[in-house]
Amino acid sequence: MKRLFSLLLAAGSLALFAGLALHYEPRVMLGIALGCIPTGLLGLALSFLIQYLAAHRPELNTTDSDERLAFINHRASAFTVQAMFAYLCLYTVLSPTAWLHGLSHTAVGSISLVFLSVVYLTAIAVFSRIY
Image (cartoon, rainbow, N blue to C red; front, side):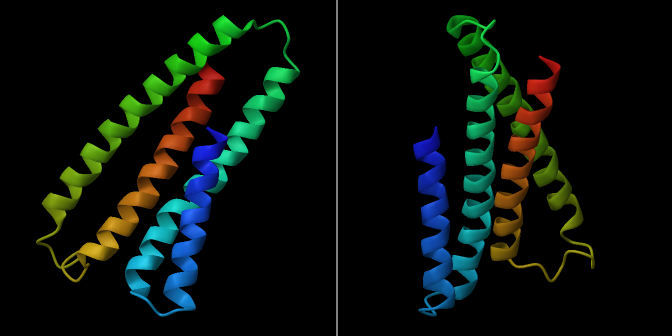
């Protein structure tokens, strides 16, 4: 998992550099960076936190821990899909109104990526405490 989050962090940093320093599609690259960098940072932080807690809780054996993590990931994924569905339904309903009328598809995509990563990582943190 750390490799995946490191790749996301690197891709976000590269996109940010390409958008700001090289002026290559700055709005699109900023959206990619805003989606990848928080996901990479929070994912790495959670990975290290899980590794730290696992080292200091030897009473959990690996099978129970693996089953628990798989269950937590499943619950967090299901919750994230439901939250994104509700978010997209709300956006669809509110998009004709004056409040969201001027929002571009790039902005909606960027907001969606950030919202998706924040909801998923928050769900993992909450479900880790509950289960």
